[in-house]
Image (cartoon, rainbow, N blue to C red; front, side, top):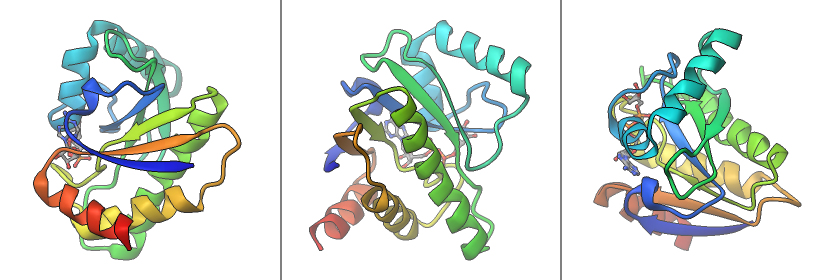
Length: 169
Ligand code: AR6
């Protein structure tokens, strides 16, 4: 899989799927979650509510899919990152699961291009450097016959710098 780094707003990205850093309620929130629901429209929330009614909340590290609504992306994969609580081992495993489960779900949908935000590094306060290392390691370790490109979309300067450095190594 090719890896690309973009600085900007994930709601503008033309990919088959974009990933949302959601919360377990799946009912929207702030940060990238708020931006995706605002730009994508009501259809995304309606499908999230259907998923809630079917399976209950989405557990940390797991992923579900909805339409992209009004977004350029066909699908939104909603994953729930861990809230940082200082437990590096447990948090790292859960964050890795977000990337793995999103990629697996994308494969099942025949997604060729997928874009990830920097999951958990905003409101959930996960250390940015560690989160970036986990994201890049998991994507590099994931071999796929279906997914051709993974785009890391960094919104803030700090994340962009960290990703650029790690990807150049
Ligand atoms: N495009 C790309 N990245 C963005 C955008 C955007 N439009 N907006 C923010 N980011 P956060 P979390 C970056 O807080 O830490 C929500 O309320 C941001 O700079 O969105 O996983 C949910 O409902 C940061 O690097 O998600 C949950 O309750 C990254 O996205 C909670 O926040 C993640 O920041 C999840 O917290």
